[in-house]
Length: 509
Image (tube, rainbow, N blue to C red; front, side):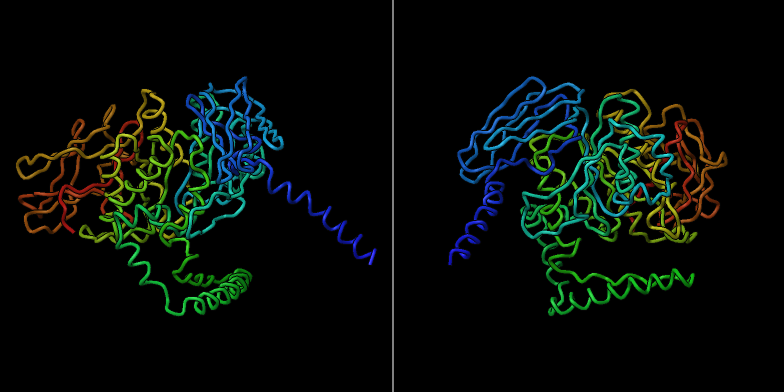
């Protein structure tokens, strides 16, 4: 009996540290060593402890206190700080947390689907090159879990910060990496990037339920219709098929044959494109960490629903900014060229429609920007490896519109047209020092239509800051399209080398 009591006593003592740890003061998961805090604005810091616990945060000569509420959460705001560091942050409550190597600079979230998730390692950059270019003042945050789909908003989502000098850079977003490099080079202050991207995901997955319920109930209704009646059985079969698929891929690689397509995940609560699940699992845990803005590469999964997307994405951005409590900048990557080129001037293209929606979103939001990528895609690869131009163009937009640099940051954007004796003259914004083509030849990718709405390839020439287009097959042209298709020819750019956005002057489908 004495031995039993002794064992129970020892067991209870072993459990005490676990109980204390659970009750101990903790920080939100986005706070950690090597992190970057946003400069020149108040910085919220929050976490959890026993209700009624006084908590004090000390950093860079300032000290602020808060008391944990009945729900166990505490939050306070640090005063605005200039760029610099490294600093030490101390959090004192029922216990003390000490974070070393904290920098203050510029913080951006890198979000979207697979082309934002596409890693530095996947572009086949060598470790030697990475080591040579490694920058200790570029800091990268990644979640421990690649993605987490949740039906309700999460408070906790573990992750860690790493300096660019770490091998973990290979796992970070390539677009985000080059964007951060551009900012570091030009601004000369620490830059922190937060990867919050998952492949194959729709915009509604990143949008909160209240927004979908109030503004887009049809999205929720369509989602429910797509869930199989026997969802659990279908899901279990998918897991078996997915496991078998891994072996089939390995055998195909060994034999040098084409690998089979990955089994399609059934729509359901754990599907990465289910409405709200990634807002809940990956965005909500970050709110209200102070940021300068978001760079966004997503839209492939919403192609075919461009009109809806043109309303959905701005609603998502408004909701995010409301929850963050600030109007932040939002840089959008326009979908790049993809699929086999058809050569058809009347091509129906969901990708072209979605590019147009992205352009309209930016034109209607002074805090949004567009990085055009119509010249960097690959016909047979939805994940092109040439990510540097995209990151650089996002960087140019941020430098000009967010940080006030007087530099070219956009390719030509169609403004208006004028008919002129059987020809159409096109006028553009963001011409800068003039128009040119990427290949030095006459502009390609233009088509004109008459009143019958049938398009024909056009002859195009640059005339000053305009482009004049015509076709012998269209005596009275009334409309123009440029680079309209999944994978169009697109050679028009400005003297800064930035490509023109695809456009159409009509609304025909």
